Image 1 (cartoon, rainbow, N blue to C red):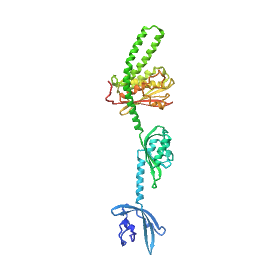
Image 2 (image 1 turned 120 degrees about the horizontal axis):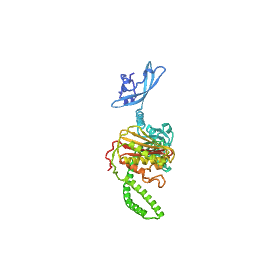
Image 3 (image 1 turned 60 degrees about the horizontal axis):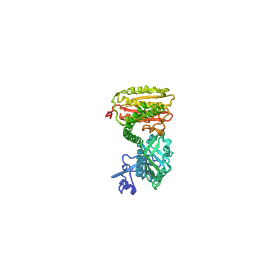
Image 4 (image 1 turned 90 degrees about the horizontal axis):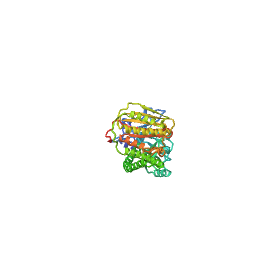
Length: 449
């Protein structure tokens, strides 16, 4: 197995001398971790073999090569001819491709790869988790399967024009998960171009910003409520003073006028004055810190008492109330009267949602390390999606004129926020509505009186 001859290229690669005396073993040209060609397997019936090896290169990186070994007889002696082909470049490309594939496959960002026609040929696990679709449901399909349908034909034509020209497109879009929930992502579409400069596919990289969008909307909503609260305080002051004068004049007239028709009309005016006064009182309650005393409060008792009050109403006769306390709920630093106001507002809305029909309202108490959650659910008519985002806005109501001021949930929102808590709502038309009040176990730095 000693080398007796080689060509110039073999000398350049391995550093073999110009004159060979048959003393250098072929194996000495290979790295320690290289495979060895199976010379011994070449016999009278098997004249050749193919093996991937690594040649040493003095002072340089080892060279990967594919060698073909042929056995032949020269006189009475068996010799072997070894042809080598440098595959270092292709091995490096394979390694780069493997690294790229692992990065794409295991990244937390959803990735999709499509062919030139826009059909998906690959999605990573993050894309499956984020969209809710399995890989088998996506491969071969157009990405429009997750589209929210909120973007017109002109929008997508501009996108296709950009990426077909070999340029990158970047922007925020709204899609839909498999369950119909909105999915907001920062999308970057990068064309995949072959050696001839032809676009052969596209790589879409998403960054899920759904939670960020939700937090931004909550922040904007809080800022809007704060601004409205400031405005409400001024309105309440400016309206309250002349309203008091009107009420006093009406009372004087009622005592001095004997005309029955006039007295009836004054009674109507007085009832409307009372209604406006209640609205102003609610505005003031929302817009300024409470003067009530914060104290250790049994929130379970507060809600139980609130249920008993709501039960007395005529509309609640066909309603069954359930209360579940799954864990021991500690005393919370709250204002009991204000919490009762919140619960009564939510319970009354739940009763109204049942529309006088037989139904149920269920309350669940839960706690974890730092919060208590109170969930009030009804199986009433539910709230349409387009109205769900408006229910905490002042003067918004779905009730008929005279039946509601539209301030109950608005005031409740302000009370819960003043305790550093939160109030959220879930609803589906025809299935019911669920309000969740979240309160901290160890609140600090209250803004109360």
